[in-house]
Image 1 (tube, rainbow, N blue to C red):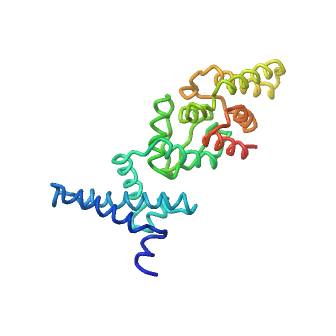
Image 2 (cartoon, rainbow, N blue to C red):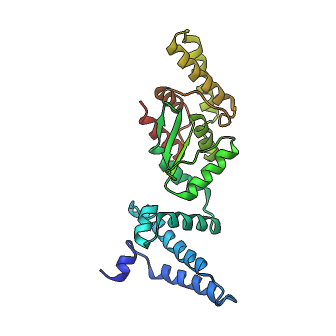
Image 3 (cartoon, rainbow, N blue to C red):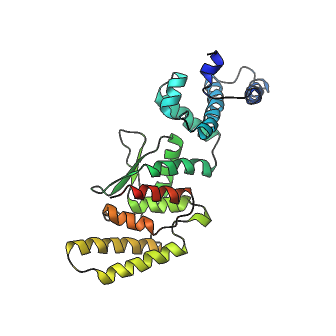
Length: 256
């Protein structure tokens, strides 16, 4: 194994390497000789390496970009890897499609805690987590910081509203047809339920559906703790077009 094989766990063309070198020279020599800081120099190299890792990860379906993988490869702490990722995102903002696709992958593996009423998921990429927390705060909710820095959690209503906001106009979860389905199911439940404990749970579900159908902001309110099977029913009535909708449906399959 050559040093080059050890550096790159995937193929990088000479053209790509030359392009990165030209960019580095331009930064260093273009009326900037000797002023490029060590921090900026490291960020440029990290950005090139990370971009190559991302492309190879999509192609090979291998783990090249996780904090753990980069930490082991570069010989630095995972904390420093996250810091470099964040600095890179500020210098080179990604398109919305890129990070929403990463978010969709996290939704697929999310878990619902029916005791706290929160959906919990691991979001490995710090840049995605920062974007999510910003949007959730704008919606009037919050994400409690945990000992695990990659954990993101929020109530079902908040997640649905968040996902709907991130969807493209033709891929909305709460499109016209979904709203009609929610409204009809709400009315059916209200007609068929009585006053026992099971009926109270169904009435809570109906109220939840009603707020979704009416477009009321759920994120700023503490929603009822839904039973897993109730949450599964709600998700089944939402729009099913696009990667985020597909991720939510995959998440629902794991509910009791």
